[in-house]
Every structure is written in C-alpha cells, then in structure tokens.
Amino acid sequence: MKIDLTETTASKINKALVQGRRAVGTPAIGMVLTLVIVTDEENAYDALRAANDASREHPSRTLVVIKRVSRSPRDRAKARLDAEVRVGTDAGTGETVVLRLYGEAIDHAQSVVLPLLLPDAPVVVWWAVNAPLNPAKDPLGALAQRRVTDAYAAEQPIEELTGRADTYTPGDTDLSWTRITPWRSMLAAALDQAPCTVSSAVVEGEEFNPSCELLAMWLADRLGVPVTRAVSAGPGLTAVRLESTAGTIVLDRPDGSLATLCMPGQPDRAVALKRRETSELLAEELRRLDPDDIYAAALKYGVDRLQLPGSGPVAGSPDGPADAPSAPAETGETAQAGDGAEAGGAAAKPAAKKAGKKAAAK
Image (tube, rainbow, N blue to C red):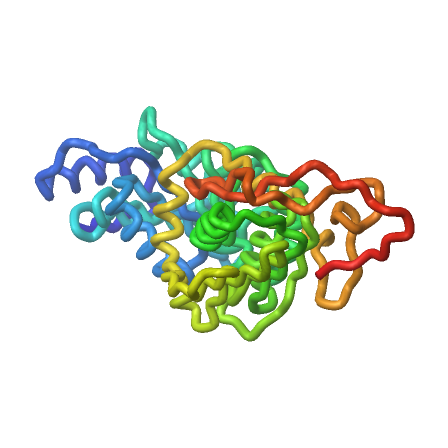
C-alpha cells in the first residue's frame, strides 16, 4: 500500500503510517530499529531495494531522505516536504517513508526525521552516496548509534579512507570493510592451520578499490609485517599472498566468484568467495550495533604505510626505520579478525636485528 503526501508534515506522516497499518491488517509494530538512508534521486531506487531485502532479516522502519535541489532562488528559500508512505508488501517486512526535502528543509533534515524515529529503538544512518567527511558530526549522524558509509562510492576512495581515519568515532563503519569479511575469515582460518612465521604479504586488486587497502592495512596491523599493495585487472580483490617460513600461502580469486586456497604441504582447495550484493552487506552491518574496534585499528594504520611493488620498507615494518620496530607474526597465536571472524597470527615480540642488515621485503 502506498500513500502520497504533498507539502506535508511529520505529524501527517505518522497518521498515514497508522492508517496504512490498519488498512493492511497489521496494527502492531514489530520492528527492531530505524534505518535512515541518505541518498539522491538517482541512487534512491537501488538503495531502497537493498534496504527492503535486508529488512527480511532486520524488520525496520526505513526513512529515505532525498534532498532535492531547487532551481530558482524563490524555491530555494521556501521549505517544502513531500512524502511517500509504503506499508505491507511494498515495504518489505517493515515500513518505508520516502522523504523529499526542498528549499530550506534540506538544511534541517534532522528536524524532519526525528519525529519519525521508532521509540526506544536503535537508529542506523546509511549514506548511500555523498557521505559527510565526519559522519558523527553530521546532524543526521548525531541521531544514530551506527553510521554506515561506502568509500567505494566516493570519487577519490583512497583519500576518503584517510579522511575517515582522521575523523573516526566509535560507531562508524564502511561497506568497503564489510566486503572483505569472508577474506579475513578465510585468511585467519588458513593461518590457524599453518604452524609458521609470516614475513611479508601482498594484496592484489583493482585500482581505486578501498577494500584492497583495508585488507592490506588489516594484515599489516594484525601481523606486524610489511604489506605490498599490488594492482590487478580485478574484479575487486583478486589475490592475497603470504610469505612464511613454511612456504607461500595464496588465496586467489581471479573471476570474482570462486577462489583457490593454496597452502604448503596441502592440496589446493576451492573456496566460495562470491562478491556480495549491497543488501547482504547492509544486513551484516545491522547484526551488530556496537563499535568495531578491529575496523578502527585497521583504518588508523594508514594507507601511506603500505608498500607499492618494488618499493622499500616503510616505517613500522620489521625491516624499516628503528622508530617503530616489529617482527613477523607467529601464526600459532590468535589475532582478532572482528565481526565474527577469528584471525590467526598475532604479532610476536620484536626480533633482534644484526647491525648492517640489508632492508628487504619479500
């Protein structure tokens, strides 16, 4: 059921929601959270479809905020709110309100959204595009316990990661991080099975894909080894190579669907690593509303500390400058993978270095 409201108010929207629930025969509210989606008209359909699919796992009230640009100065000075209320089969397993803001209402979106939030329920804000540099300081972000962005949608995704690290606040997360959860789980399980010491790593993936940088920073932060970021034709992440005392551990996914795990002394194994849809990523983020400390540590490691093919060691690597020494990770210990993924290979104690040792990264 759909109800269109023109030049309306939050009070009329709430009345329309009650009217719609009664009309479809579900007067009770069985939703667990409020999901606020901030997007533009071009991406609204895809974002709303992803939210409806995710609502099958997390019944929620979805508020879609679309800021419409007015052309004339008179229209820009006039505040206007149009709404489309969807209940029943048109809104997944929850309720959906599409809010279109015009004029001065664009600068006060939080005042429009606040009366429509579910009482005593967590709030999640997802910027499908054009996320603010500091989500926690954004007026809409200040209403939420969890703030979801997507650096992949930015024009300069790698620079976006640097900005996210500078402004990180507990509760922030990014779908580029969620995309690598299966990779982190598989690499953690592989290292738990291999009694060896990792000395270096290489992460391969398409250019301008922030998930590659995040995976590389996670490996460098958890293992304490130099990590090289290599560029491939894609799609997405294509391979991870870990050099260890037992040999080379390779997780290779050339086609974006099926990967091959190669470990020393073991037969090659096929692994399902299909690239997931946005709805699956969003559903995963909605399962946990507490701060992601592992994401924060990886993000703050710094993109500039990663190595390029053929470059020398950087500060903080085992063979780099002595201001931040560290040693290869012993895979017998367990490192945190975050978000349900247990990682193997925590950093071991720094090893003594011989004087005059040449700096080299495998």
